[in-house]
Amino acid sequence: MSADVMNKAPETEPRLAGRGKPWRERFFELSLWASLAVGVVVLVALLAYVVVEGWPRLDPRIWMNFPDIIDPTNAGAQSAIMGTLWVIFFTAVYCLPTGILTAIYLEEYADPARWWNRLIEINIQNLAAVPSIVYGILGLGIISRGLGFGQTVLTASLTLSLLVLPTVIIAARESIRAVPQSIRQASMALGATQWQTIWRQVLPAAVPGMATGSILALSRAIGEAAPLLLLGGLTFITFNPTGVQSQFTVLPIQIFNWISQSRAEFTALAAAAIVILLVILLAMNSLAIWLRNHYARRW
Image 1 (cartoon, rainbow, N blue to C red):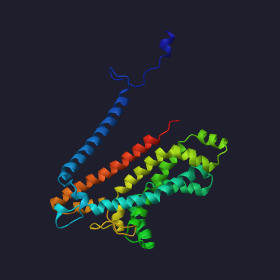
Image 2 (cartoon, helix red, strand yellow):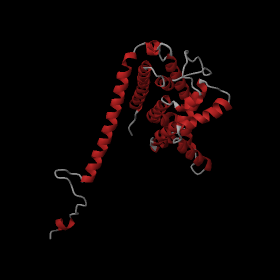
Image 3 (tube, one colour):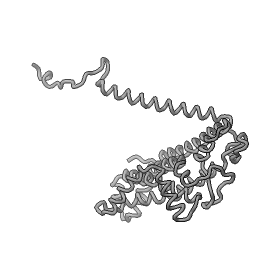
Image 4 (cartoon, rainbow, N blue to C red):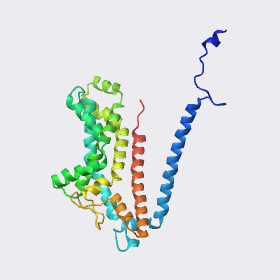
């Protein structure tokens, strides 16, 4: 018996005729493609249904007019659109600096051996999996009633900030961790301090990942309705917010209100509002992709 025959490893799994992969690997790959196809088909069907249903109301009335429970043909969602923009803007103002600074501390300054740093990391990981309704209860009990902020834009923004803060911290930490240590070592070898190294070398290199993670976190916040309903977000408002102490409504709450109505005209209004919300989400995600591609660096 030749050495080639003796050294040849036997095939452990049967292979399909004409294929180079074992049948189990091919079956797993086909299962993944089938799952992807089901998800895409369902998503496209839902989007098509929403667009077709809301097409008669996709005109300037939807963003120029205020809600009207008597005449749905002239009703709009201006107060909900403006309320959504106000709430998301202040959510970003509150959570992004806090999340990024926390990530910098944990990655660049914190000593993993200290018990309080380990406690912070455990809490961040656990809070990322807490249901949104729990944050609504927290906002209602502490921010709205405990601090006396009431049912205002400020309360909603702080509650949503707590909701997405763990996601922002985790994304920022991963982005900072991806910067090679050689960049830090070279900067400090040239005489830069640790903070100068972080500010001028690490953060610019981590911007793509941090920006993408932050905008995706805000995209989650913009679609949340459960915590805002628990906070007492009003379903019928005919004015735009004028400050952080103003009462508010947002698009998810307005959509929930219209879907709850019995007349068919409100169903078309709700579908049109869903399209507006999707356009805002797509704009935010497009900005994340642009920032990632514009500031991306390859090491």
